[in-house]
Image 1: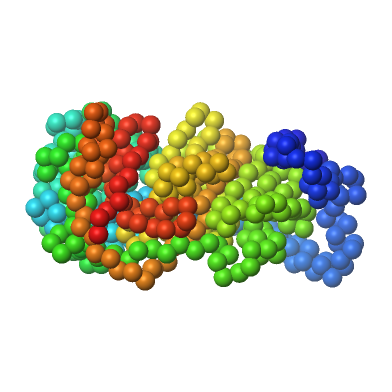
Image 2: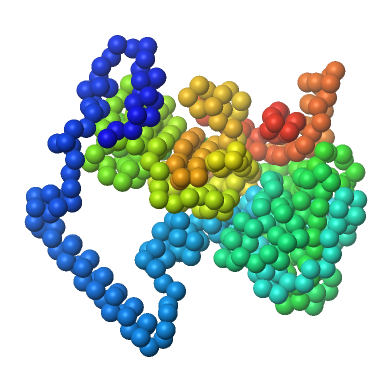
Length: 496
């Protein structure tokens, strides 16, 4: 039976029209619409060989399992862990989806003198990042908790004044979820700090290093320090951006509400590639056939899906799922079917979200988790794109379009019963042809903010350098400043 929620959704959409085309293209199913697997086998006798192969495979598995039980005793094995199904906590797919949770927004390497070089894309090829991950593994296996600090006790200058590597997340990452992303359940980190937004790696000498988990967003800030003795850290910034520097606000004396890394171009300016956006059907005709290829992976049985087209909007739906594609750049999905599992933690919801996003075949750019929210019954994750080494954000007018209403390029909600709602600004970004030269200065961003708010200058919580895309698909370099705790931002263009 068709979900009544789906009918309500479409009734509201078409309540002001007299068009009955939707009723014709989405008739309510009757008994003739119900297809059983036995009917398929009778109608398609050549498919019987599939059933025979499945029976043979299961028989072999049973013999193998019986042998292991007889000779070796009980074995910790299950069908879900073999298949790696999302929701199987030990499953391969579940752990692979969760692994990306430990990926920071950017990795910074100190050059000394409060100058940090950054890298955000292709981190798996960055030696400082890979060495730092091994240091985290040592902390989880045999790390030695050295000290905990609060507020002014935190020795930022000692941690960041010399050689250091920083994982900058930009949001408070739960420590238990972070540990789970490494495949563990240890409490060595979560027992000392509940969440953190940056990890600092520094070395006292060749034999001893320190790993510091810092929550700079809490009031007051907190930090915990662990000693490592087996893992050598790497402080060479090979492959990092050298035409853009970051400085740490506390070390430079600049007052923010929170400690932040501030962008600044050295002498000569910042050389960058301006990204070029293209839609998921950029090289194809936007018709039902091509859109169906785009949305088919979202459905379990696409043969049962009906569709309609109206005023630039393609709608595909079955009894419990709706997917929309419109304006050449927007994809939305919503399902009202509940799964037979309960999402009871941040990490389980994250893994469910990432597993679902893998169905979006047009999602090709690197992304990062910019923040999340939890309302007691569902988790909402906000992802943005990374192009080269800077985030991509939508401007205010694009974000506020009626059919979008988005705060990030990708928003996905996961409920306790695994229902999904997914929205994406479905552009892919490639290298543009222009290579402009920009003078990056956080002081310029502050001047613009003061000029715009002469009577009441708001407190700045964070500052970032981003690519900003507008309704016409034009991209420009901009400063993005968070000006209150309601995730409100103001942006100013960078002057070339």
